[in-house]
Image 1: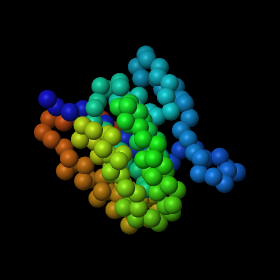
Image 2: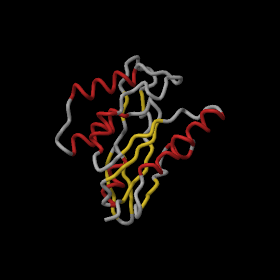
Image 3: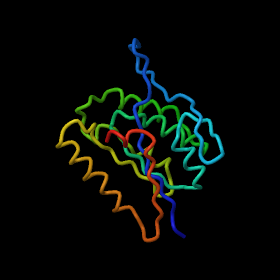
Amino acid sequence: MARKILISAIGTGRKERDSADFSREYIDTEYRLGVTIYKSSFVTRVIQARLASKTVFYIGTVGSMWEEGYTQHAAAKGEFAEDTWVRIADAINACTWHAGLDAVDFTPSEKELGYGGKIIPVRAGITDEENIENFTNISKIADYLEDGDCIYLDITHSFRSL
């Protein structure tokens, strides 16, 4: 049976301007898909539900809110572990814009995606070199596709700038 694969970007969330700590969050938003209105802080889960897609490929920088992606998928499976969340958040907090794409261990988050889901880290896309590297990394998605897969591309957020 063909998989429905959702390719979605994950962003950095909103951080309070005057906050010295690392607290950031996605805010609840209403999304209208067709005639149905969904309220969620995480649009990818809304789109997945609408498409009945089990497989998601996330694209994002090492500074993206991977801890929230972990939370969304692990909680849905009843497998959320706070110590794992803290490790992911601490690794992200330690990153700078110039951190290597291997600065964060995506294994726990990718494990929670299940169903062949993948995480594709990219650079911020500030220079031509970063954009070329991003294109190369995103193109690697083809390595994970199977004959008959149906691909959906969520352009709700960062794909507009990347």
